[in-house]
Image 1 (cartoon, one colour):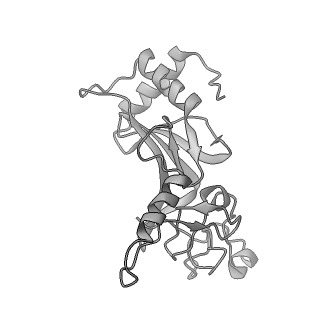
Image 2: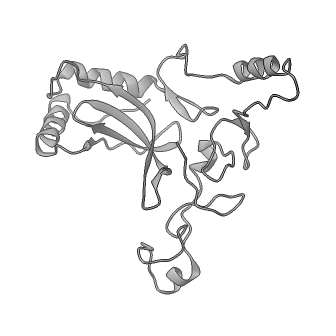
Length: 211
């Protein structure tokens, strides 16, 4: 259970004030550190969406940029409205209190019957279907065992290794020896692209999601 220890009126005032002052992508961040032991940012983005992003999992954008991986989003405001009400805040509280994490897919879901909320049994059934095809037909693998805990996962890194997000979530940022010696903890001028980021536990390359 997630408890928000602040009156609704004060929270609404803070959210709406932040939206009015900030027209960028990230408008307001709730003081929530984790959900189901997954470290997260819980944001109001683009003035109307609730986003839950992973703190320790990055998505590849290009060679110069990454962003926190999105694990869930829900449109809260509709019809062009730009002001949150108590009803909208209740909706956010309900989502946060009832959302569940699927270790297999690496996503949060509000409804267990969500068609995107894939189960391992469904993957086994799909895999069994493909066994009926001729051997000259190559089937794309959609899941493998996590390279750390060996549980089945659909979560794969840019370097093509499978790693479930609960394990991924625990990997610390790598800091090269030179940056450690020079106390360059932000690794801003380091030539090693993995310095200041997580590294794949299998191949030691930059650990990011690619999609």
